[in-house]
Image (cartoon, rainbow, N blue to C red; front, side, top):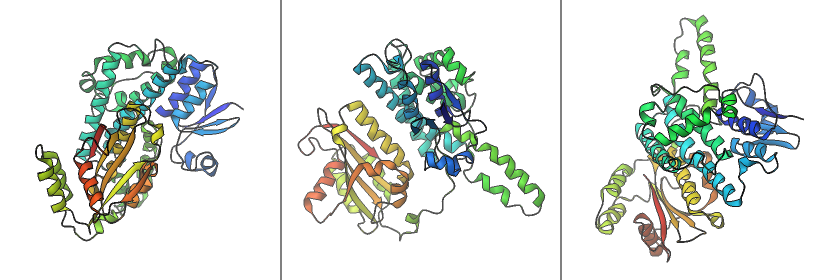
Length: 421
């Protein structure tokens, strides 16, 4: 049985495996006439991936989903493949840059791009945060590439394949020349990579975006249903809208989210605590933090309208690399963007040497962790959650220490502290 890749022919996540196959001498066939939103909803597809994400690879030994895992599988089909490095440290660095490409580059490009094309609600503060995080990541990548042609070693590795595919969406759809000119080594790297024959064969000619897409309403697809008079034209309008769905395939591994009903947290009784006021106080307090910010928090806190939660990462033994651990926490905070209106959080990375401990404090609207957060942010299940009992003085003091990034924290140094606000 040949390897069969289920994805559209414009899916940048599918390109990862196809380029890896070119380097590895492996034959991977892309299914024909794949239609996002249709092909991936069939019973046959859902047997391969129950949540309907693409791409999926069929192999003689079973199926594989998640694009980075698929690319790794294809690369490992070749013994001693140079794509995977020539030493243990090479392999670790390749994995490091794959994580970086996914959590810092791809995630932030998507957070910027998806709302602009109407497949998520557009929020200017969220866009600003995404652009700021993306620039920070590109600046770090630019520094590395100032003295390196490739991400690891002196030839193409799987890290370069995944990084380039993730950058392709940004360069071709939203990152204009005026944006990328700030990162000249990234520019040089990207245009070098996409013109290497094995890359060019799969990616084709890439043209840089000339402008940032204008903002489109996330509810726009439902508008054609409103006019009742020209009934014969309604199906035509909807038919024209349907082909727009595959464009989401370029952007990510999931379908476009559908407009959601009003958040249940908006239906709760009004609270005396105004979350934005607390966030402003936290951000603007530079001195006497205990006396001003901490006291202000407890003066504002409404135990009937909000609840506090401690979280502890379940797999701290795996946190052996500081860079990867920090990226893990950063990715979690990015995925919590959906709760920004209803939450405030502090995440501490603790320890002066590995393994590093990750602990957090979260303030949520309501008396329970919001269900939509549990449902949509997969990181939640990676932590143990415990509701804070503010009548216990030790727990209340622990809240104070986490808000103010007290060091040492519980007898250990802080590697980093991140705030969600």
